[in-house]
Amino acid sequence: MTLGSDVLDHFNMDFDDDPYWSESSWFSWAIPERGINGFFYNHFRPNMNCLLAGPAMWDASGKHTWQFLFFDWQLMRQLPEGKYGVDYDKYDFITPYSFEIRTLEPLRSYKLGYDREGFKLDLTFVGNCEPHGIAARGDHGMSGAYKLHFEQPGRITGKVELDGKTMEVDCFSIRDGSHGRRFLEKVTPGGYTWATADEGHSWHFIALDENDCHDSVVMGGFLQRDGKMASLKSGIRRVLERDGPRPTRIEVLATDELGRELHAVGEARVVGEFQLFPDRAQWWQQFAWDFDGFTGAIGEDQEFYGLHDFRRWHRAGPDAWAKR
Image 1 (cartoon, rainbow, N blue to C red):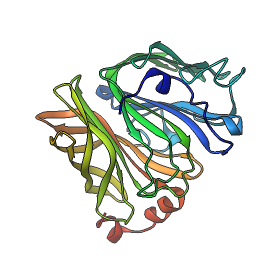
Image 2 (image 1 turned 90 degrees about the vertical axis):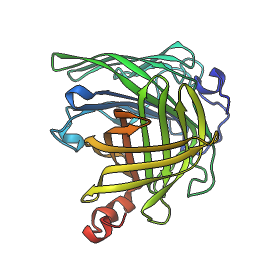
Image 3 (image 1 turned 180 degrees about the vertical axis):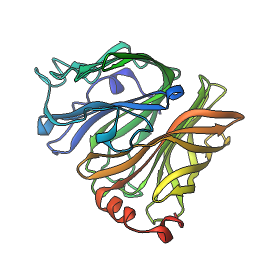
């Protein structure tokens, strides 16, 4: 799917009056050598006149948001001043609480900023290839989930400062974005998984698990090998080991549209357990991945659930955890 700046760098203004219409954007960042993971994430909901946005930074000192090194997810804030899509845009805005994104080069480079409550973030994302799009899906419980979704692997550099201590950031990253209806309470459980070894070798995999099975089937993703990217056409995400209900070791098997096969095995390094939205919860973990001859490639795995499924899964017990 060919995607231009007119589609990805700007709000889609062709939306109806559904209150759950959303424009989302996410950038990963990390300091792997310090055992730190982070995100920079936002959702616009124009029909609710609200924005959900904020950064997070966590390490091994605690897996819950109240234990994180920093967490400032602003859940229900008014849209920035001015006219939505006219006076500000999807990658050109700042909020009163300092959350800021600026486009440096369309479809390629973006500046991220934050300065609040003793935390300063100044990062630049540069994509290493074109964004990869996933069209709307109606299967696997995804009906109405979005109109368009995309990912782009890249590198993120800059600095973060926490309580006067400055830390350098320089690592591989991925960003995503979407527009469309986002109502997550009934979301099918699944996994959002990615890894990047260098500028020419990366992959991304969205898996859904509609039958509580051991293997989650691919819903979308890509394989980039030797600089050439192609969409995944089949594959599974398989949890090999868990610590209680939480995945700790995962295998990904996939085939892309060029017939190339991917076999990746990853292990959890930095654990986060989130309820970013009232109707959805997940594990969000930094992973180290082995694939294509590379060892310990930076990446993540996010195992997500509707909130009620997540509650039931936590309470299911060892017999159930061992089967999935």
